[in-house]
Length: 120
Image 1 (cartoon, one colour):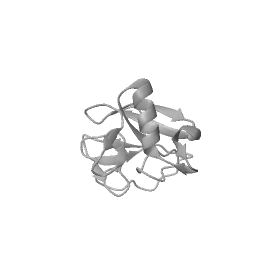
Image 2: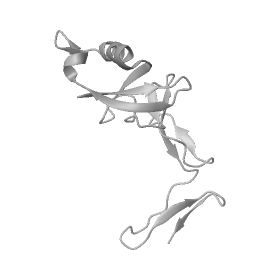
Image 3: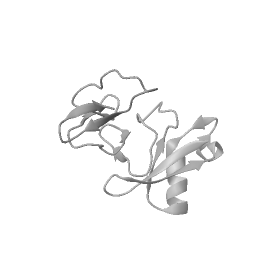
Image 4: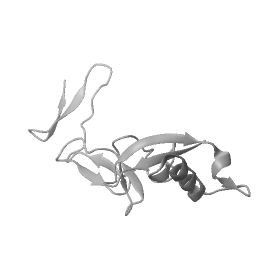
């Protein structure tokens, strides 16, 4: 099963749907363009294939993610204004590493106002 993300004109993902492999396979080879053409004809819009296990385009697309054509990657929403995009993983990272904590007895969260991790 292949998955495709519908991309709005501003680059945001507005839908993700599965598509049978038979639709995107020709002569035993998967071809993303076949899926794009099929979905554009059936549902309209621009479509980009996404990888459920992240083997291409960095992250599995989800509504609200951004498709960055330059990085050829799906990027989740920025969680805090201070966080920075790691262009290798296309994940947002805090300005400082999270401290070690015991998840069985403690919780941790990012305090954006004070730009620090808080353990409770």
